[in-house]
Image 1 (cartoon, rainbow, N blue to C red):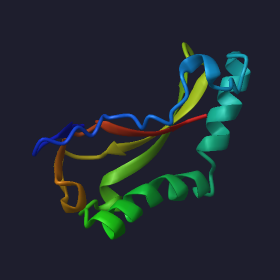
Image 2: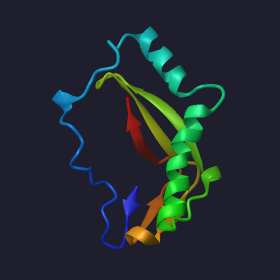
Image 3: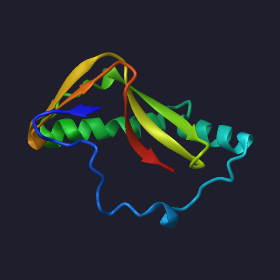
Image 4: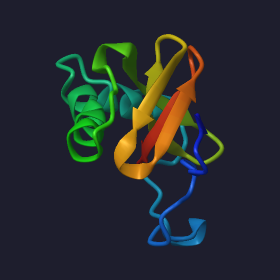
Length: 118
């Protein structure tokens, strides 16, 4: 994700705890990883809807023009960090404006927004 107009969309809030202070959710075993990914990629799409709600809020609160159909929810296991990550993957090359933050973001097809770790 590349920001334009002088905005850095990769800035992390200062409230994020350092790695040593984060809780670990799993022991990293393959079976546990599969279960965790399945839980965050549930067949009813509850987590996907929750994840895409971030785009809805950006549209509503900052005047962004995200098209929800152009992003797919992905739950991914990161074995090195022993965590599940939630991503919103761009399904096509696109440019999104976020007027309320002065940003314009260019996405390549397959590029993702990392929205959460658990």
